Image 1 (cartoon, helix red, strand yellow):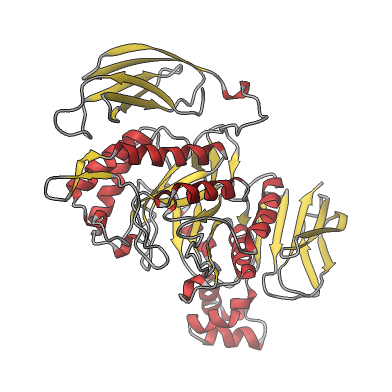
Image 2 (image 1 turned 90 degrees about the vertical axis):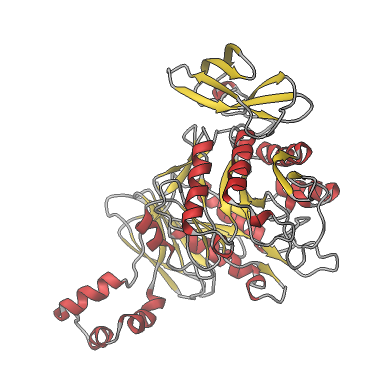
Length: 510
């Protein structure tokens, strides 16, 4: 079926040497004539698989070579013929589309993410509870790790590891643990059935088992195997690392890892890298989108303009009550960050770290959601999905460029305040004007969304096109209310606001 994983399964003797670099591949010829080469993998019990992801409907011809020879045809049924009722209908893989994301079938994808780092390393009952929670939650992307994590509130030993050990007690990267990968795939498959993307973290530094100490040869074997197994899953994203700059790899080695993942993935999944302090080079040719860990999201529109790629704030602190400073923001502040990101043309990721006696914190292990932000994030998600398309930042702000222009042409400073601004250095001038930034996004001239964050104005203003008519709503982002204030508005419009935090205005073209 179109936009779903397809398999060819064969029986043959187990590999005599490496269980990773097996000599098995298939060439698929799409209905359009395009050829795609896919490597197969060994999955234990004298079984080999080749997995394929078809984008086009119609007849695919294939030819298998290596330790197995075979040929045949696969009829790919159009996704349009699938009933939309019941189970989730796949729209295909998510791709970059300008500064936003789209599925293969052209549907816009607006990521509203969450983080459960060690999801697959928990007991079965807890994993089932987490997946049941996700099924009813607003999140359509989950960040999780391949390898277990050793960190505060997360010290349990997993039942399975990705690799077997050799006679010296070291991980053997030529011998994957097939039961582990089947377990990982079962979680990815269930997430896909809910329409949730799996942002899979390949490396991380919080490790007591030694996986973070792979050399490049071992890393190549790891990437070779995991891409052979998972590249045909439509809902996988590659996150090279969680906090890549803490790991002991050079920039050159990280670039090699990015290139290796890109080379080994025949279907071109999304790929990025997550930082602690130092940002990844998002100009990297194999990187599809911007991934950030930042506390302040107020200036992300500049990074979108700089790299001309979609932007995910994948860590912006967590709603919760733990003592670590990144894990105790309020539910309102989490919601505030989401609205700021959306109105600047970017996207945000939720996390939750509430203290509890059993040490089951959502951010690390999953379980159930306890915070106040998820319901409000869903409210925003519903608004965004009603819009005719994704938002681009169109607000007013004081930028370095404006500052430099005023310094070069002081005549433009028509009052004492602006003359004082250009006498100050840039950082002081910027600080003086920080509160002047407008958080406003638009989709062409069809929709405008303005967010007043923690400001409490008594009036809201839109300067809309004179030749078009708009419905204007006042939105309370915390109480989750929407009230029509104007119907048929155009030009300069002033709307009475309640004078409280967390208010937005939405103008939609009639």
